[in-house]
Image (cartoon, rainbow, N blue to C red; front, side, top):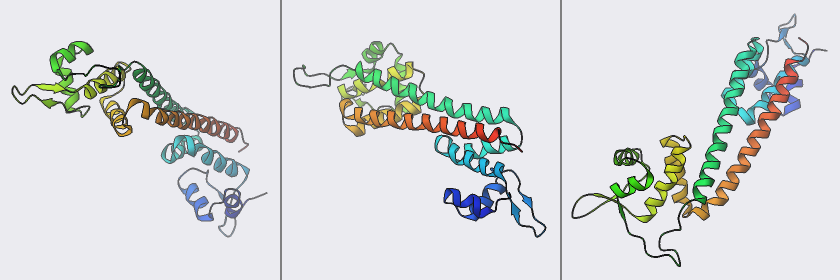
Amino acid sequence: MPLRPIDLAREHGLSTQAVRNYEEAGVLPPADRSAHGYRRYGERHAAALRAFLALLPGHGHPTATAIMRAANAGDLPEALRLIDGSHALLAEDRRTLDAVRTALDHLPPEPDAPGQPPAAATRIGPLAHRLGLRPATLRAWERAGLVTPSRDARTGYRVYPPAQVRELLLAEQLRRGGHSLARTADLLHRLRTAGSPEAVRPTLTAWQDRLTTRGRALLTGAAALHAYLGSPP
């Protein structure tokens, strides 16, 4: 039995124009036309729309659209490549979260914390030695925005207060985990905004929840796409 645009739209609370737009974008396969030029959809179109809407939460609009275009063009390898890309991004975010947790667990006590002796600022040479890096690497990190050290008023040498030393210890953990300077700088910014490593842990819990939600959304989208691919032409 032919379906009208309004039939597909009502199932998902969409407008008929949205359904037509999805067809024009390649999300839906081309509709048949009646003798009077009206669109006539079928169950395969309904399955395509369900698949696209299920793909959206996990992949986002551009990637979900590209997946459906590839599927409708019969290019299953391209559709699967795009899906793999979204899973790879999720896996990378999981690795980043794990690296942050590990780094926080191995940070030394906060400077001037109760029971801790006052900590002094550190120059670039001893700090680079402690991190197992070259001073040139720390200067590159400075240019990338990870930290901005102070300058000794007498000598002009770079000096790193205890809070920055802790941040660079965290950065070194993240960089060893393969994370980019841009991602590392972003995570350090989050840490500064939170105020302390312990204050950032609720943020990590919320981050974990978002990753779990994305993972389940990717599964839901894959199931809907699988159902669409198996629907009769």
